[in-house]
Image 1 (tube, helix red, strand yellow):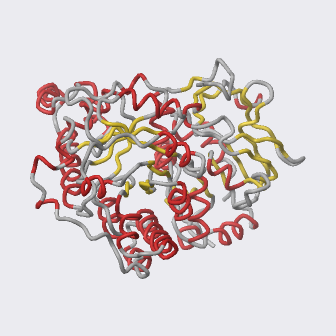
Image 2: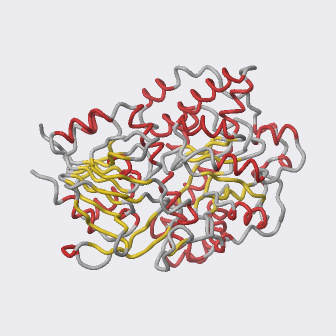
Image 3: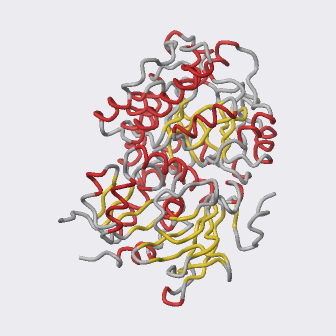
Length: 194
Length: 315
């Protein structure tokens, strides 16, 4: 299969234009993905921030779950920011079935509270990634626990996990697409092969 | 209240980025007016990105008259606790006490709205001072930038709420987009004169000139009644849609029992969500419209005398 674009940004709803903007600034060929046909043209996928309840319903309604899972099983890199992280998680708690369920992480939705508790802060990255990252958390989830194959990429303070990596997957509970620091986009793009 | 959950002094809450960022997360979505928890649950099920808690939808406010105020606290709490998507509520223009009450209930967004009876004809709420974000209506670029200067983190067209008539929303979106293109085309030394003409702050006019867009997310509102209306507004530059009376009022007009009403509302709401997401794909918009054989029986905006038009409220 020949893919035309390095990155597809799932454009069901949310901050897809912001991701497209940063990708264009780092000269990475990208397109918006709304259908199975679109998905066949991209090497990797970003699931943006948005309302996870809405995105979950719309990917089901437009039959995107199976095609994404199919590509994932062939090794397609996927990065989820905020709502996207929720889409990737295996465990959303007892009353909430997983959406894609690709990452071995347990996630609590709106863990910091409602919009009034949305915040900005500097987060610590692992030693390979340099200076703290200015991160924006909007009605953000947190990663409550991780499986043995999951690597912690960033934390708030010592104990709150806010970014993780597992195989070809990356997940952040904050929004690098709302800042002008492209480090997470560059990190994700480096996962793309060929 | 604020920061209570995170409990960390390095967490900066209520910042401009946190407030305008939530609007960015709502883009491409539909925000629906609801008057009960049951309606909020249907809206969420249909794929709404947020709901607006109201006592009466605009069509009823228009029909019944009287003073339209913020929804009762008990209703806002009931709706807040019924869904996981963000919940918004309207306060009257200039009524900062209603706004503070909505903030204290920790709803996610305040709509300082011309649909309610204005409390202060001179001054809008000083929205910069709040921890939760505001959305405001605007009928042109000058109004939008004045609201943003006061702290609005999101703008919507005013349209003419409660009519099911799209003409005013189209007019307002066209006007705003045309004015943005005009500002972007000017020379730098023409901007101060333009700022005077728009009656808008110079810094914001400069920002529009530099970026070629509004500094915040811009939705359409006021008269959207069908999937085709929703698609039209997205093509004209809206980044999402508010639907007021077009869903539950339309369903009630077309049914006399609850169960049937809920089925109609769900299919209408779904179709408008799907059309907003896939507005470029008219085959799909046609497809999602297949099950819709009702829309609200509207009133033509042009038949409403100017003093009765909601869009003329605020300045």
